[in-house]
Image 1 (cartoon, rainbow, N blue to C red):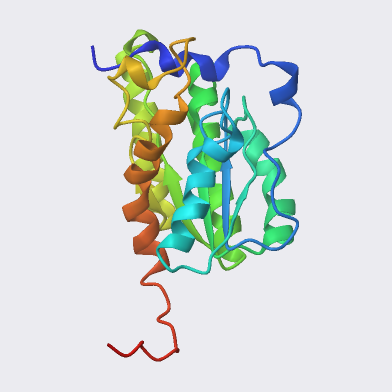
Image 2 (cartoon, rainbow, N blue to C red; image 1 turned 180 degrees about the vertical axis):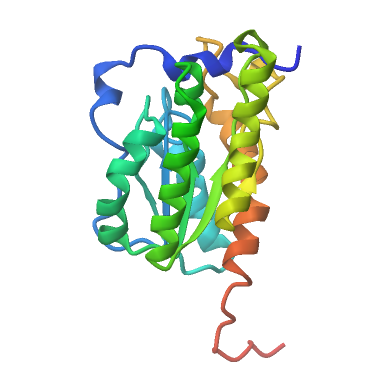
Length: 222
């Protein structure tokens, strides 16, 4: 089977400690803003082990000056993300906005037209603020029905095409079939899975950021 039960956790009741606020973000302006749900909020693991924190580390290692703000909340929907985005854009003034939302809409059987509208408005708002946009898509398990699951998956492509945003069609693709990459609940990715998630989205991020700015310092003599 192409899908496993990891996806169902995104709609499960949340522990009080994870439902009320986003992962702490730096007070200073950040070059990259991540707006997501539990998959980006490092649910069940240390925030420093999550793929967003690893992205922050990799940027520095690769020579990028960018910083990352993680505004992800477990259980978030596109509607919630849309309501929170203006404040985040004003606070961080990002160069790139990564939107990892929509799974909870689908798992709750919400109208997909509304999800697409929310995603479109988020992408438009980010671009109007001067940011590039990367959308991380998701897939639903087949028990939601072939028509709904197909429309859900295609919704991310439609929004990306309509707004000129970059797209990773299925964020969890590299780990979706490996049960060892999920926590004891069989649902949320482990800390060990986070590097694979980052590797999956890194090429799209590199394309959007371009090459790191070369140092003006002279090369060391041999």
